[in-house]
Length: 396
Image 1 (cartoon, rainbow, N blue to C red):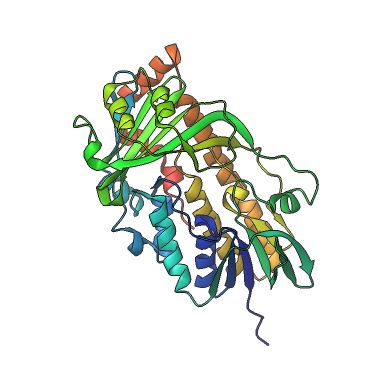
Image 2: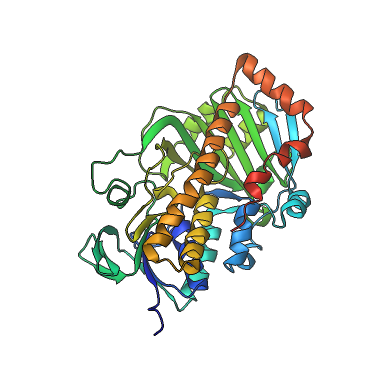
């Protein structure tokens, strides 16, 4: 007799949840994606997708939908925030694609989400329902019963919790229903916006990622919408503790964060009038990612600080790893989930540690900042980028 087809309930219709549904469909696994928000939001700003992410988007059939709206920056320009002096210019573009067999893209987050959604809505093995929030689950024989906040009941072989930083399912999976710690603010906030590309100061390279370093603050900007716009992020010391990742922010407050920095950066910030605010949160690594037939994925499993541009890409890696484990095992569903829960944490913790280290490096001051600048000046750019082969060379 043929084994029954696997099925999944996926809590969360963000990047991680949609990618997981597509990865499952490639292996014949049906899924029902439940997104708590009733409408598709236009939130977020830019997103950087390294070769380890674009490689997965190709495998999921999404890359062709995104390539016309994504940009392919030629370089990463690192600058001293106070003087605008370029500390190093690291190769991207053709160099990184030749090295890793996949491009480095910058895009608007909503364009990535839209491309995933188009593929999901065209896939007969996937059902997408909005306005349903999965808040708990129960084991049921050789399956699982997912329970919605409004009384919805969905049955499947497994449950994937891709419900983000403030996951309702994390306590039941990672802490077996015990009291679970919440993510904690780290004392920094990200302020995000998008401006027209013609507002970029003429002294700056248009088709590049720029990072400006200063004590207690740094800024990142890069092309999106096929180069027609610039995504701009300012990350600074900030005591506010806002749980909303897309709250409005006053333009004057952001301008104050970059006061005293170089004129080109101040000019770009001054030209932006619609800012969104996100208090950064951290969380200690989880001991358990799975419980029986339920598994955590993406920010629900490993919220990551945005100093390495890898948060969404780690969710893509989670998705394809989980699907591969489920499709390739003969040992059983729970064993496959446990294998996923063992395979991913070392990789994710390595990336999270690198992100935290970048955050410290970006915000250095005094003698340590001078030492940082000297290293960037004297290490050949290609050699510095080769040090990230462990990150960008990852394959499913």
